Length: 240
Image (cartoon, rainbow, N blue to C red; front, side, top):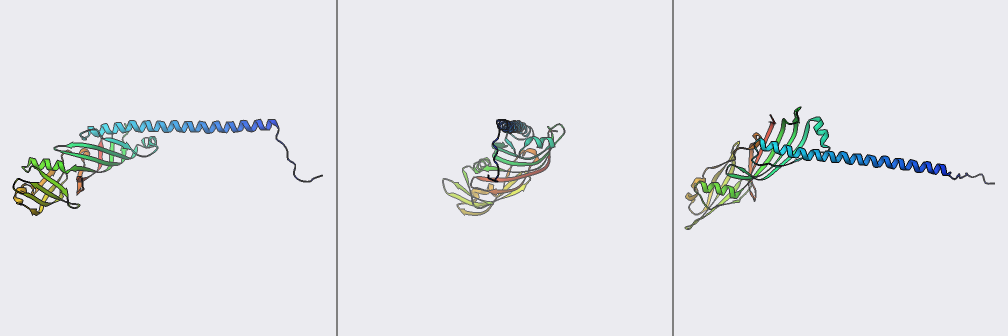
């Protein structure tokens, strides 16, 4: 007779017990997955509602039109429970600021909510506003220089071209911040034609009125699409 190990076949009762245990584990896993899905869905519904409420608040606090708002971070409900929203992205196209039109993109971070969840303080906001060259040309037309064309000539310079019946006037101008809500276009060289036609631009200031949330300009730069104003603010109250 063999002294090797003896194999014991499982009984039908043992097999039934194993099948029941496997079904129980599967049910638990499926239940947990459903609960997790419901929690994620509830979180996304809550953040979508909050996006709309924040957009409405921003419009009430100085945004000329309702912006697009996206609250970053997951899960959102834990941020609400802690009354500390970490990161909010804000964007708006064709925002009218006085005579100018801008495309705005901003980031608000570390938003501390009040006990009513409708007010609080935004710790930091940084953003940009793109002013197309056409908007600046329109302002120049209001100053008596119609038909002015602006093109980029470096990070802080633009080339000005004015086609007249008698001549084509061209020049290069520097763009620099001149105040918390303005920047200045200053002629630095003339490349052709009588520069006297551009005399109104020897020191031409562009004001960006009514910046929302108390934001101020912290710098300007030039891109292929226009002039970009860099804005920032800190410790900004809302909802009060």
